[in-house]
Length: 542
Image 1 (cartoon, rainbow, N blue to C red):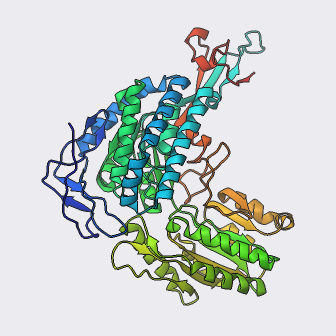
Image 2 (image 1 turned 180 degrees about the horizontal axis):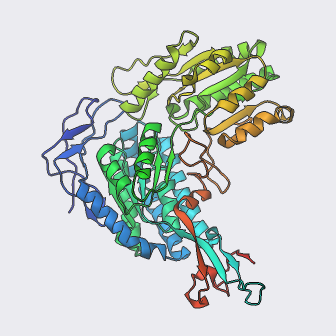
Image 3 (image 1 turned 60 degrees about the vertical axis):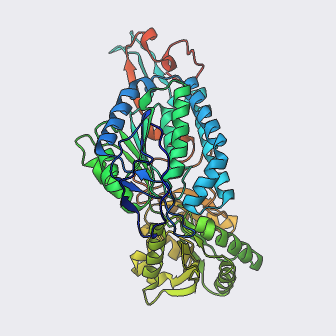
């Protein structure tokens, strides 16, 4: 059924879900069909002016969710048997489809998110780059980690059987779109791309803040699936809220794993639901991180200026809505510290209040900042209130306290998702080790100083290795390079599984599990494990 958008009057920004009797609405994509036309729908809202956008999106019914899950389960065996070349061709086709939509994506995504055109184009390029990265990975095929131990029938006292193992797809995956990356962590983002690469069907739960962007990419996915003859249930796109649709997905027995990027409360809720099932499943949720920076003494005046420049950019990048924005900076007291605060404060004043992605994020940012500032021993160094009367704008902020108070007030570790940071002064470097020992899991931690500092404070480095997924030296964490060696993960509460990464080639390992074949005839083994190695893979043998 061809659906068209239904123009409607602007609604107050506070309105999220509405009841609508119109029949001209965009419904979910359930395999190759459209979802039911229920009587509930919603608008996206333009963060720049607070006006509801005209298109309407229908909340999926529970029957829609069940149908999508059944289709995914049915497709999982066929999709799991596809060779790497065909999966690679599908991923390359999808990248080309997304690139062909770039101009339309710029218009739609900018209006739904308030993000500038340059950011939209950059994220489009990153998304397509991720798809091609996984396409190359599965075309080569070595990622399956093929292991072969040949039989030794004459071994004493017992013969050794022939045993061969490799990674196999785990089945249908539920992916929850992130609000802050409408492309790279959404419909065809890293979670979905790595799941398809592993051979798993994907059901995507769209984010309510950018449904139009999700639908554009979702339709591109369907076209690519049809072109390369993948089974229908390889993909579905669901519109709806988390409490109903999200819960139903997490609890459906067809779903074998969950990929999520968002709030700690949302990720924790999914984790609890998945573990309460009769058949618990893994949840790979990237949630909360303050990405602390540790500044060693001895920085020169020029170094302070350069550090302040970089910190300002890192704190305010994307209006502070990156999961790697630095939320806490530990800096030395004294002359260096005073100069740093002065320089950093002046540079932050240049940041012009900008729209956040949606009202929910702006509200949480304001409440989080005020909560940190409510302590008598936390000083507001700088706070810029936006002057705009409409939209969801936010200004930059700087808070400061001492390490002595920080140790006593554990709530100061709470993430504040937005363009602000907390500065914590210390007297002795040894105090940093005490802080690191009590620190929750983080995506990143950054060290700034001289190379000799790494040797002098090696205990701190070793401690931080146990607390983070990515450890940086003299670099800021907001630049996440999509490559073979990147780790975008970390111990709880940064993620629900600190052994995984949601960015880079390693992301595919979340959606695969090892399977061993013992005593199988060679011609009935997977191609990756056959004796003559027809795919030419690098394998671990004997």
